[in-house]
Picture 1 (cartoon, helix red, strand yellow):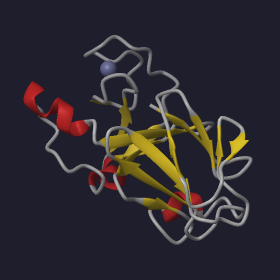
Picture 2: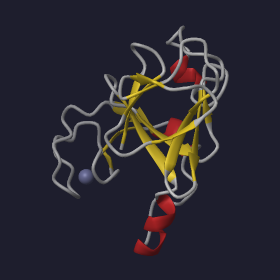
Picture 3: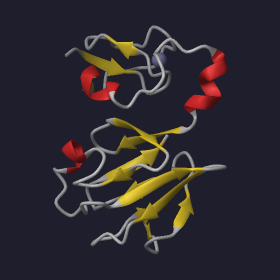
Picture 4: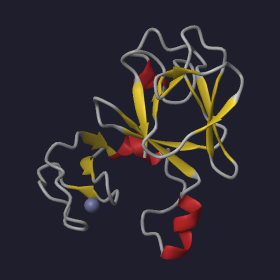
Length: 152
Ligand SMILES: [Zn+2]
């Protein structure tokens, strides 16, 4: 297991002591340390991507956990919940449901609340359950008061 700091701009894995990302120059002094082993299962494609594969990689939704800065890579059809995807992380949030919200990609990304106990909130508006709502970069998705993700 190795620990790295993932650049939020270009996703380069940097040494944990790095202050600036050498690839894009972003200040990563405040980026939290990530275990590469925990990330590996989320990566379908090899790290050395040619430009041909960039479009393909957009079918992975990136969600940043507000507060922790941790980035999650979500495939289309994935359900987040305390007994679903990212359950290790979500276990810390008791008000998140076992199967809370699902994400889909078709012509864009959508989020669907799975009739969760406390609801899913998109930009502070509660979503009607079991309906898909469009999401865009910068949107905030809350599964509880303290479990908020920003769409990258
Ligand atoms: Zn970078």
